Amino acid sequence: MIFLKMVTFPVLRPRRLRKSKLVRDLVSETSISQNDLVLPVFIKENINEPEQIASMPGIYRYPPNDKLINYLQDSYENGIRSVILFGIPSYKDDIASSAYDKNGIIQRAVRIIKDSFKDKIIVITDECTDEYMANGHCGLVKYTNGCYVVDNDESLKIHAKIALSQAEAGADVIAPSSMMDGVVRAIRDALDSAGYIDTLILSYSVKYASVMYGPFRDAAYSKPAFGDRRGYQMDPRNAFEAIKEARLDIEEGADILMVKPAHTYLDVIRLVKDHFPEYPLAAYHVSGEYSMIKAAAINGWIDEKTAVLEITTAIKRAGADLIITYYANDIARWIKDGVPF
Ligand code: PBG
Figure 1 (cartoon, rainbow, N blue to C red):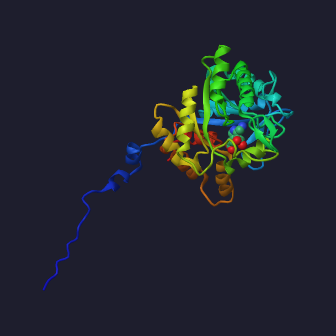
Figure 2: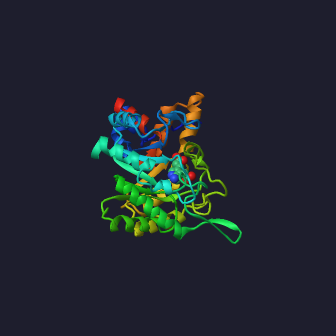
Figure 3: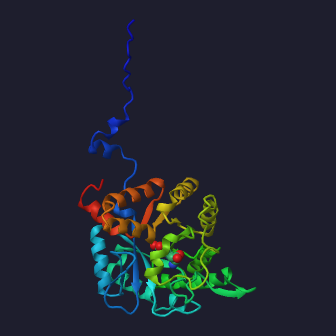
C-alpha cells in the first residue's frame, strides 16, 4: 500500500508584507514625527552652568540664561517645537509662593524663551506645587483629626493663581499635574476671567501614583517630606477609573488629555483614546521609564536607539497623539538623520 503524503503549502502569506524595508515602510500603521514630541526641561534658580541629574544620565538642570537658550536652539534644529518646563526654586514654603511669584524661576524662564523664540516654540508649563512646597505635596496640607491631608478646595485657589501667573509670563499651554478635583475648571475660570481665552490646558487627567517618578523627584528635590501621593494620584490597580477622570477633565474644559506614566500604562492609553477619540491625547514617558532604558544601555544590556524607538512607537500605537519624553531630542535627531526603523 502506498501512502501519499500531501504537502500543503500556505495560500495566505503575511510574510509578503514584510519582505523588504520598503514594503514594510509602505504598509506601516504607526510612525513618529518630530511634531509628536515634547521635551521636558528642568530649570533651576541660582546656578550658572547646567548640572547633570545623577539618576537621569544625559539630562540636565538648566539655569535660565543663554545656556538654556543654546540647548533649546539645538533642540529646535533637531525639529523639537514643544517644551514642558519644570521649575526648581531656591525657596520653598508651606504655600508654594515661589510658584506664583512674578519673578519666580518658571516665570523668568518662560519670558526668556518667548523673547528668544517668539512663536517658534510652544511653551508648556507644568502647574503644580510640589517643587515649591517645603513638604513636597501637590496642594495645601492641613492637619485634621490627627492626620495630614491635602485640602482639595483650598488648593484650587493656589493652582489657579499659579496658572494665571504662568499665562501672564507668556506660557502657551498650562499643564495642571496636581490631580486635585476641579483643578481644570478652576484654572479655566481664572484664565478666562483675566482674558487668557486662548491659553490651552493640557491636563494630567490620568496620573497614577507611580514609582516611576522616582528620578524626577530626585531631579526636582520634590519627594514628599511625609506621606505619599496615593490620596490624590490614581491607584495602579484601576483602569476604568481613567475614563471617569478623563471625562471630568473634558467637562471642565481641558483641551488635551494625558495619561502618565506611558510605557507602564499602554492599556490605559488605549482605553482613554477609544472612549474619547475626538480629544488629543498626550502620554508622558516618565523619568523612571527613561532611566531604566538608560541604565541598561550604559551597561551594554540593550540597544538604546532600537529600544527607545520600539517603546515610543508602542506608546503611539496604543493611541497617544503626542509623547512627552526625555528622549525627545535623541528621537528627533534619529528621525532627522534618516529613517529610524
Ligand atoms: C508634579 C509632577 C511630577 C512629574 C511631573 N509633574 C512628579 C510627581 O507627581 O511626583 C513626574 C514626571 C517624571 O517622572 O518624569 N509636578
